[in-house]
Length: 460
Ligand code: ARG
Figure 1: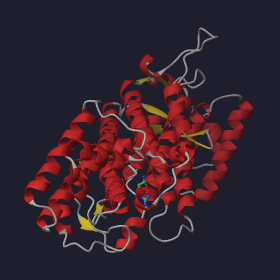
Figure 2: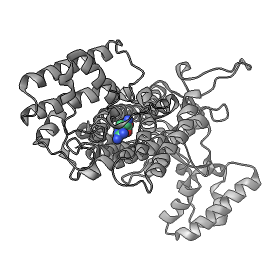
Figure 3: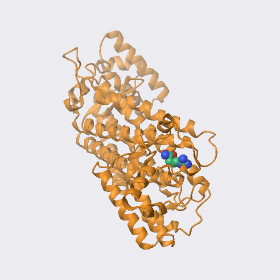
Figure 4: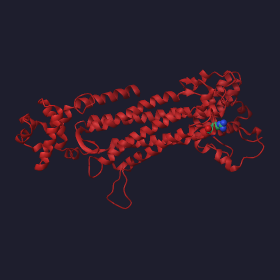
């Protein structure tokens, strides 16, 4: 008898290169724990259904505990025939407890087994990632609160546009992360479905209590169709798309900080702990942490696209192509966990240079405020915009900052200008004027911080 789970109908040996090509153990060994948990629940369900005697189920559950211990302690020895984690665990169980192990797979297929394992594994990964995101959000909220007084230039087209609070910039990224956290909760609901009990594709003929299995394994729902259950990898696609978008958000945040940490901007300094040097230029301190976060977005987005292409036009139910779902999934989880960990490190150790930010604020960034001043005096905005443009040109011609134009000069442009225009040239006053919900005023930013924390309280 061949040692293979499926060896019965085969007479010829497998080409060893085919064996290696077919094997997934090198990467799916990561599923050892969930595979054992799934098998233990299944053994109990078989006992309830009268397929296993209570002592047989007991022997299997205990035997699997021993297999788990070997994995845990790094003592599990893989054998050449261990094609995948399911084969390896069952092989070892048989060695430990004898032929009764052969009853475990009754009514089960690796098709419903692997789908169950993957969902169990991903659910745990999602919970870890959710924690990482919550910590990042909490840190962003804390910094935003502590540094609410710091003003900096806001940019559009990378050109200086209008003053904003540093906190407002930081929270602009935090809201993207908040949506990522929300989205991940939604993905989780669709991961949290039990496929076990679907067999290879056509269901399970034994009176297995699937509700019991779901309770044992903590699943919220049962897959409603056995063919769909072994076929469906939508939950992996959704997760990878989530991961791609989250990594993309991290990359945009990283890019801003890379720019702000250049000598030219000098708004922030990265802690040494998250910077690296150059092998050639002794003066260099590079933001490798942020560059890697930025760079890794390509590969995660690639995984999402790759799995979509794999699934496109794949025939119904299980096809071996589906074995290719794991490496991108594992890599995406690892990449996100790494990136979120480093992002948190960078954010919590970053030094701000408010004086450099203040130096970068120039009166021209208040040109919009000047136009709005005229609006306050009853000038239609379109006209006010035009007049202010003329004022900017005049200051340029005179070689002086916009704020240095005298009231007389301004009055030449429009009689609505009065002495009180002198009070306009405050960046603080400018951000304070934007006091609607979502604006830059202290009050509006504080409301954002409260909203973010409320989300963390209900979400976490
Ligand atoms: N290693 C396989 C996978 O990861 C397990 C399922 C194998 N099923 C099968 N019918 N060959 O997809």
